[in-house]
Image 1 (spheres, helix red, strand yellow):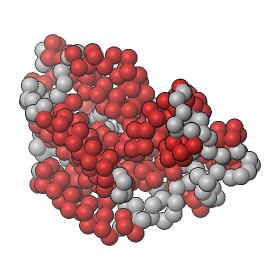
Image 2 (cartoon, helix red, strand yellow):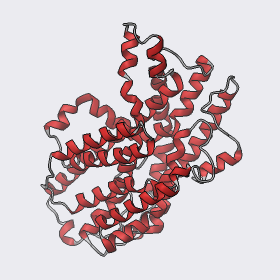
Image 3 (cartoon, helix red, strand yellow):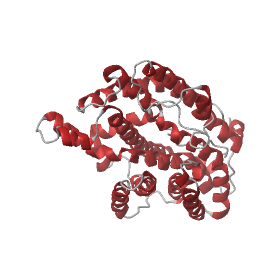
Image 4 (cartoon, helix red, strand yellow):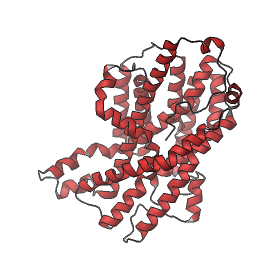
Length: 406
């Protein structure tokens, strides 16, 4: 749910002469290193999108593991094996905190690098907000219109799928102005939009976080945000009010990683135990999920932050990168249009279920795979037609300093 371009804040710093005269070899290495880091981010983003999409797909199409096991789960067949193999997807909502951590990293990375070079650097707040608006709102508007169109068709095929909520003008405007979770529910069947309001709120508050970073340092900011997160969870989340302060910590973890990486030396390496900690927190999140999604979200965010911090240290072209092979490349390509897939997958699944099965849950797991084979290509087309032009439009707004350099 964030730009594939890591430099989200834009540049307003002229490079000193010594930087401009850098050796071609070092510039080439820097570009290669940046591309490698982008590959890690895209692969994680692709994995998260696939995880969340199929998590919702099973909910819309399948009867669920318990009903399946009680009915036909004791038979031995390819269909039964396939159904049981999807068991880990029960924790598929773990993909959402991945998006939050990555978003915080991507948004802050450009500013963190500039602060590392020039402690007096100030964020161009107006430019940042304009670029975020241009990046998000054309895509959100198109997704809302598409959701309305698909849900309208689904509503003509009773019985109506329980996933479809209000699709009137009020619900449309609540979601367009990113007020879902505070002033209303998500639009129609597109329940995944609950995170979009939080993202917009996080973008709105980012200049304040950046200013605090300049004065206090990122570790102090992270501690303050953690305290706010705890209070917000107690005051708001338990009353089913979803506001950015309840999820701010996960996003700021990503920003902290960006800051730490910007100040680290190129050959700095942290302990491999970070991977162990990552696995431990992810496992704790899966256990906590039984008691509630919110606690699991926070634990998963910490786990994925540990993983990201260590994975970004991986040298370009090392054995770990090469061993990923086709799977890693596929996830990286999927990461390019993960935002589009995230925004439109649910109404597609609901429409397919309404047309094919009149919204009744199926005992067979196979249709869910077919649903995914429809949603992914449609999301790619949506990305090419809507999201990519929005990205280019966003990039066209140059910071004042960058325009002076040109």
